[in-house]
Amino acid sequence: GPLVTGVRLGDGNTGGEGIYLMSNWWKEHALRDGYAFDMTDYQFLGRPIQATVLARRDPLGGAYHFGVQRPFLTGFQRFAWRMQQGESDDYVRFTDAAGVVHADRLGRTYADIGGLVRIGAPGRLALVGLSVSHEATRLGAAPILITGQGVQPDPGPVLDGRYDSRSASRVNLLLGYRNLRYVRATGLDALRNTQDVPVGVQVGALIGKSAPFLGSQAHDMLIGGDAYAGAGWRRAVLRFQATGEMRRSLVNNAWDGLLVSGRLAEYNKIGTRQTFITSLEWGGGWRVRVPFRVTLAGTHGGIRGMTEGLEQGGRRGILRLEDRIDLGSHLGQTADFGLSFFADAGRLWAGGVPFGTTTPLRYSVGVSLLAAFPAASARMWRLDIAVPNVPGRGLRLALRLSHSDQTLTFWREPRDIAMARERSVPASLFNWP
Image (cartoon, rainbow, N blue to C red; front, side, top):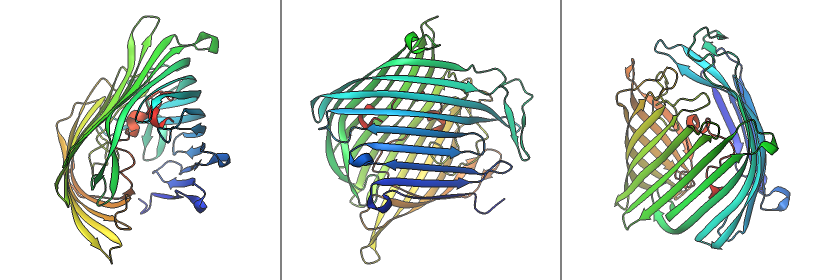
């Protein structure tokens, strides 16, 4: 295959104007090239308003998204609002025991508009708001097979007619509560950077009901929510975050579309230059109404170094252990370097998804080379050298180079779960959108 299968170029602050620009190209064997363009203006019209445009052509499918929003940037803001509209065509892939890749189309058209108002003082406050949303899902008329020669019809019965297209327009009540303070901590999600860690609790919820006067074909209720909690001591920090959603039919009172995910992590400072991190991550779905599965593969949400998703299920749990050592500043105090030893262990539960399987424990172990430029930077280069236990392949070496700022977000939901969510449910009311 080709040596280069993807290129990603961009700038987080183009021309110093607060404009984020990103373009992608990637290649997938026997399918068309993928292209994507993403732009966000963080000072739209010279105001604290964000405007986002995204256009993507995937090897199969594609998407576009437009959004204008004024999010909560500080606890002193009184109001926040957003408007968004978009459309996407995704193909959710399932691999059977023989290694054959089946795919089912998941198309979406969505739009919503809404706002929030703050009640209370910064640090301890409530949010109340309303939004109006519409979402329609379109499923492929027939599943397909993805082969080394391209795409062909899937003659099997497993995916054929399994999911139904739907359309719902809702009025949504938005509620939130925050009681947080911030403590300063050094060397948690970066080598020597000092970050603000929220300590306390915050919760948010969306309660939506279908609205026939908006033309809704569905007759249901949608409930979504997220929760965060944090605690800090002199040498340890404990953090938790989880999100979920579910739908209730008002025709037969049945619950479905339940999706949950989250992370629990403990950071222990063994010394001034050593941090031990224990992290438990989970995610899954029950009676999901759109094509859905989770795997142990992937650079986000899976086991490090495991790149082949030959197994899938409806639920996933992963335990991560990492011992990070700060090796000090070098190159004339212009850079920090570090070393990390890690181990991941996880498994899947079948959960009723197509070709789902309950797996034994899978694992990987490895070492990471870390660097931050300049010294004490929050952004960190990381070269992971992992040895995963790949089913049917035994042990093999896997390398991954990444560059990111992990201090910005404690946890981000993996894409394989986020794809199945309703677009009207915000990930968190407190950074809404």
